Length: 502
Image 1: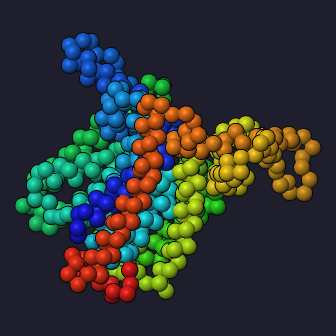
Image 2 (image 1 turned 135 degrees about the vertical axis):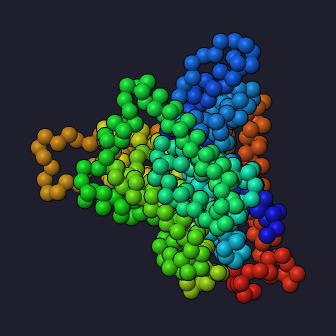
Image 3 (image 1 turned 90 degrees about the vertical axis):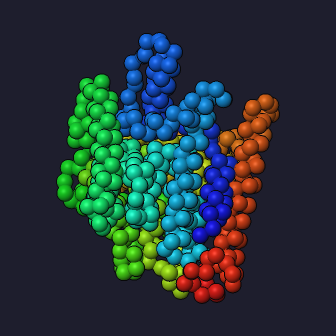
């Protein structure tokens, strides 16, 4: 495949994502905590190089692996603008890389048109888009897909460098978050597939891969234990607090992680619905890919279903973020080309997904949580299961308020729908002003009508150029891809799709 198309897709996605960046990330989940850990690492490094006493290190809950990837952004941020601003580009870059790897892998499985369509569906029609600004899950998702691509599409590995790289990707997929062990079955399968053939001759490469995974797991586990020990607890103690009380709740969570009307994956990533129907055909056409996807998704779903709440206040089912790209890959693995009769439903699913994901990217995920706190209803039950606090509905209402620019406050009372009569001692619902949270998080839009000078003007101009250049690069990628697929002398003639199909 022509590498220029992959590069156009990557840079097109990167520029498009950058155009709506909030320019800040410290308030996204535990990112501020990891920034402090990264600063302590940089301070220790500086002290060692300058021969000064090193300060104590600050650990984060997910260990050193994610922080190490943040260090270049933090180091640059200390010299240019701010750490918060520069680090906000980290998940943007990771998401663009994730989708580019998805596109590269899809092109090996299906036709040019379907691979490009599924790539765009993943990039803008799923929760991948909002998480380009939220972060939290992007590293794990990226390295899981990279590990799968290396083991299933770049085999056989015949060098220590590639064996080390595979081990590094596997270690990061399982160690970059405390929840990584749910991916052990999928990673074990990748190692098995990679080294099962002629294993005696390639045993030394397998040892390198497993050694890298094992050593980084040990380092990560020690750092995570130190973090929790400093708080006077253990990670096991924290886990027990959140475990479900009944097996029936576990079964309900298995369904809710996909079909919940407030936090289900199918709501926040509608195109993956086709993956549920693609399993039989994908199993017949590309069995190793199918097994990898099922193990990855199955590990995540079965693992997080044990929790009392399978989601939190962050946009959608954030723990399912890692499932999105593999499920889209499964759709491509089960189809040689796009069929309007069979796959036409992808277009309305994509349209719905783009609308929902845009709302997630347009606003800071915490506005719903802030509103529930103001209303006195900030419980997990309200955030995960109450339709009044559905994030999609709430963000849509905020967008309407922002678009119409009402002069005064926009008052709303989250009233309950009591069954028959309300209890006599039930507290009345509080009235809150929704206009307070209607301002979008986009740096470009926040400073649209504000006088801009110096670095502020330069940043704003860069984002504006990105908003124009990104879509143009993606259009150019699609033009080159479809043009080559239809050209008699094109490089993409290996596709099995007829000329009239995409």
